[in-house]
Length: 175
Image 1 (cartoon, rainbow, N blue to C red):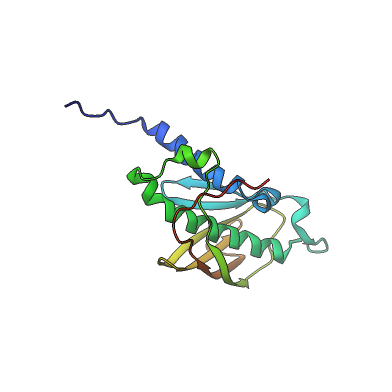
Image 2 (cartoon, one colour):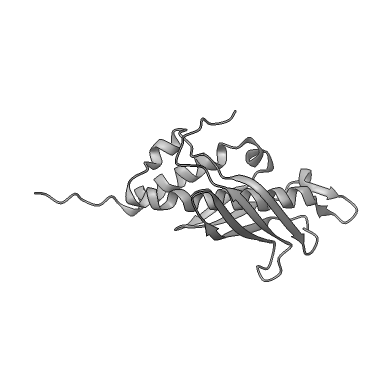
């Protein structure tokens, strides 16, 4: 019996990136804000590129607090979703090409999100990373931090609680 030749690493990375991009692009509000994600293995960093439309107080100028909260929530939901599907992707139980073609997983639903604003978001790119504290069949708890120039000086942090989808149930891509 012949052993199956492993796929080149670059092919695997491209499939993972397409699956992640499909998840992100499947939510119109994420596209509107311009949020994207940098993936290094199973770790995701949310990126909120600066845009004038994000400014809430032009006197300072500072990024709107609602945009900051949305960025934290999006990072938590996408990070939690990626954590949910990562093991299935790696084990071959879930085909990344299937996700990339539009069969997107159900996202966790926000139960509650508490945001702590630590300093003004300046008119520049912002970054965020989610840390899943607990993830069960029905409920998950996530902590998120956002920063700009220095990860040790966060501009905001949040704690979120999410209702988990019952299983991988594909949803169609939103317009």
